[in-house]
Length: 385
Image 1 (tube, rainbow, N blue to C red):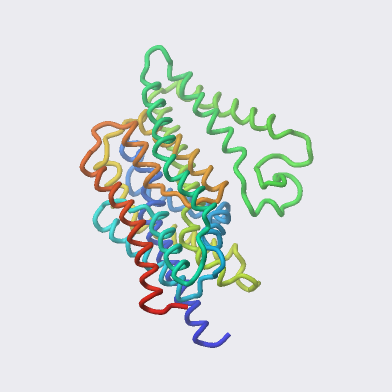
Image 2 (cartoon, rainbow, N blue to C red):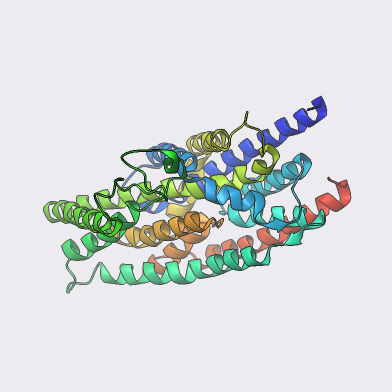
């Protein structure tokens, strides 16, 4: 490999790290714990620290699906060169940085997806229509489905005819059932006690069936939460809220790391000296540092400027957020955590700023169109490739 090519690979890797930092400082680092901070369940700085660690773990253990989709699934018939990767990451990170500076959460999934498609099409690639339909469906259904679930939970928890020592454990059972079925790509190659063919955290060897383990996890989660809420309602709700925030933070890292390192994957295909795990590890570290150094500002913006949420409405926001995030990871679809969280807050919350919500939605749509146009224009003007 000649020095010029090596230099381009280094610059592309640095651009990927910068993108990971921006993601950690913005969507991945801010949105998971924003409702918990708004409900005074955790301080801003402590939330930034915890979400950084959990985001790193999610990126390393679950980040492969979305990374592969971003790297190889958005445009057919062409592989982005190092210069194209640099353009994609700088466009996405630049637009995200503007959002962080202004306090408006730009959707990372929109900016990176638009930039990859714009650069790929300008280089002669073909649209991946099947993937676009999958991505578009999830993006459109996120505010509809997530908002509906958030609304239903927010309206159920305060009802006197539905005791919270019943309703909250039911939510815990649903979450517990999903958690025990999380898939970790690196576990698929582990022999012995904890990995099934799909990488689920289920005992191997055939002693327990997946439905049975799922049921046991659901019941155990419900019983623990019911005991906690029954002895201390306020404290129990806050602890359940923090557990949900932790799961969402983990899922955010798993999903969002693909937006930072996905474009890099094709560059290193066939090169055993830089395995995919190492690339995910680098992206996870970037998210970790970004969360610790840049997330507090966006956490404050989301928790205080969008809505005033108590523990119940915060729980209503985070439950669908976790479910949607894990669905996106399973399907390998880049999804915006800003869209997930803000949609849930808008429907399930109170005192929502209509003006800021409108500006945010326009920023999401505009960032997708702008990143696509900038990506296409960069290739055309600079003759990338």
